[in-house]
Length: 165
Image 1 (spheres, rainbow, N blue to C red):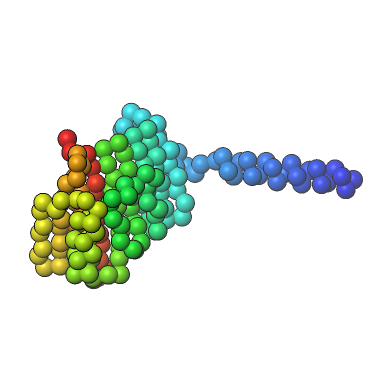
Image 2: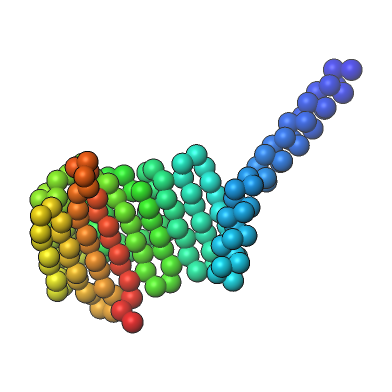
């Protein structure tokens, strides 16, 4: 009897693990169908708490709290410390949105130094009332870094690295 009960519990555990691990929520399935229909491509949508991760044949997109850098993030594109809220990567480039505890002035200096140190040529700089924008080029790529504060005083850094078309 003990042996049968043990076997039953193992089978029950196995079935529950399989059905839990393989099942997608209705929201994930609906999002996948919607993306696939609009893009004409396969999409894998994963929703974990407040985080959303989407993977398609063309790339990845993630949003939420403390997102990881996209796989293959270019080593010559500097990323400051902070909470990554959104990340995207595809064959044409990469992007990040970061919330930092640093001030706009600190980040302005930091990015000006790091962008140049990494071999990028800054070809545009715009600075006005708490907003900074850098444009840079390197080989056949362009880089855009926007540093700004919102109404609550939170500093946001947006980075876009892409192929020059």
